[in-house]
Length: 353
Image 1 (tube, rainbow, N blue to C red):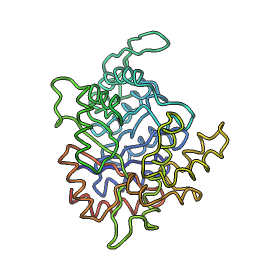
Image 2 (cartoon, rainbow, N blue to C red):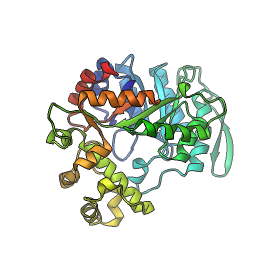
Image 3 (cartoon, rainbow, N blue to C red):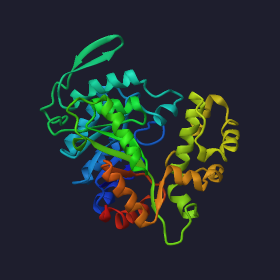
Image 4 (cartoon, rainbow, N blue to C red):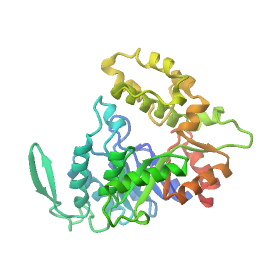
């Protein structure tokens, strides 16, 4: 199994990706949330100049904030800097859109977007739908070094539900999935992917990745220790933020592992004025835990949202997922201890999966 890193795109943090390459990580996925982090393409360009083997791409680029030709030009530019090791991860956008109080791109528009961008990544002509028009577009000078559309750019489509996973099967070279520690759940995801795929679809030719925060417990360490909360708490709180977005926008009730903390969280977050609540929801997103949210880091939330266990437990889980068809886990630790966590995973996990 490949182990990659998801990078909180930071224009002054390229050393992190350089170190990941040295430690044997397979992929660097650069997050794309414009109102949270640095621009992903600018950071990817710097990373491409300072690395030689690690695969680099968007993790994931947002269809709702960048028109298809813009994303196509951006990733093809990176492919000119890192030929043969560039990939394009794409999603309809939850956090990147919700941070602006906007919904993710509707599924029909996402489908059309993927239909447009896939041929552009290969240097072919595509139909671009804009303001009621269908316009044929292509990069008109691909052979002058501005972009690289000669070396293939695989497209990995993010999807968490049946409709978006079907689009991954229809358009993608792979999929970015919601993480599960249960191999049986992988089979359900495969069936959703195959629902949109062509008749000649082969699982072995389709690359699957899932995002989590992974932590190796010390001997006798509790799953809710102070170290665990410090190193992966940001991912757990991001999961809480996501559940609130689902509740706020669709009326979805929280999962059972949030029941005990839900009333207090609702009281805290809904004290923020509605006009700017969308900004407060995602404060610290996948970087750190705000002091007032530390009390919500329960054992059940940590277990449900992160991959935590002893070295042997993690290896067993990852091997089971690999057997079920998961090709890669990308790890996203909290920002401050990221270097230490990356080194621990490289030492204890990467050589054994």
